[in-house]
Image (cartoon, rainbow, N blue to C red; front, top):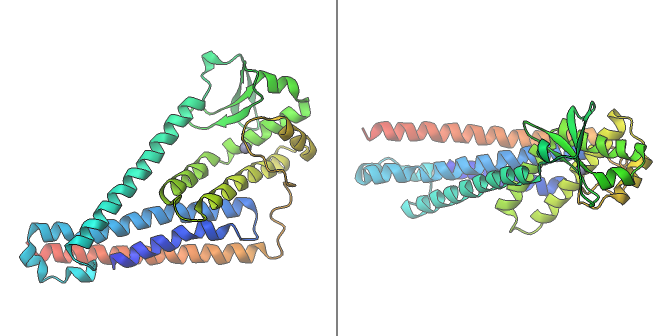
Length: 293
Ligand SMILES: [Zn+2]
């Protein structure tokens, strides 16, 4: 049963790579990919943990454990259980490492109030805009408790008012839509599975989709002029990766709802199957544990 949980986790983890081909809007694509990636990592972790759990019973009382049919719970015997445990530990280490790295990176990119040249408050982003006195042409959003948008003095001087509003709306959209969470899931997914072919390019695709999503939100909600956004993006030097394509291009597929509903149903079914198998395995384990006492 634990093997089934792990396999469902692997199936969920393949969804972000497949989702790049979906003819749906960038927001739906990123949401499905991130939900499947987060659920996949969690389900695989639970599956490996459950696959390793008979080791504890076996170690506790090997002779009695032999009669309990532990191989039904997790096939392969003590060596396979040990390998599953090591993989679960290694995976958790990678995930925790990525979360720690993300927290450090956020601290490094933030611009403390005392270091900012001047401030403004952006109503749309509901965040402070901090002007950095640097000659680089950069703009980025820093999420978190003290979320803010950083714009360099040089960039503010290079852009027209309309272009500056477009950049602020784009960065504000990142904060409003909490894109940091999606990017964190994608970073974790890439860290754990980046060695597999196609994963890095799928993650790059979803990162670009996050940028497209912010563009569409800026144009739709903040009534930003699309051409001003295009012009601003040519001035920017940093890698905020605003896509060069027309931001309205996405979401205009022939049957987006059907595609989205189909994939969402597959993800939901996989999560339900994983939940059922996991609870079933935990039930079997508690019966085995009770039998040993
Ligand atoms: Zn952006």
